[in-house]
Length: 207
Image (cartoon, rainbow, N blue to C red; front, top):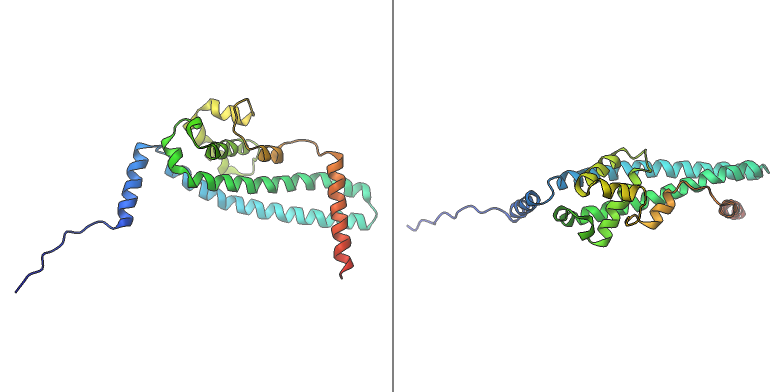
């Protein structure tokens, strides 16, 4: 009777991959895994903030329409400035979410490179932009924790350069524009007010 030789147990491919990734992390940035988890938690927080901001924008537009219908042009015009800023903030949230995805996808590069200048350009922009956004968005609490991790990783000078927008910063220009605390130009407010009035006119025309 032939006895089958017992085959030694071998690790599965998934175990082998996890082991290899674990070894890579040991030799790289020790806080890479923590950073990745924090960013994913932050994205969940960001969804809540985006939905909240969307509701605020929708309500403000309805209020402006009501004011226009009552011929209260001055009050409607006054409300447009905040609407414009809220819309810019919602756009900034979308950009921030994209930067989070970029960082998660390229965490292996981040783990290996302790110098921001050696990272791929899009990754350097994503990290720098999140650092900048953390200094402008007090409502995004987890983003401040992520900023601290990147400050530990790339140094205090990196942090200051991007937060203060000094020469050599990598902060994304559209993000900078949408998070800028600038006064809204009069022509922008008039264009937005005209757009709301036109949308209201078109909606009522087909009722």
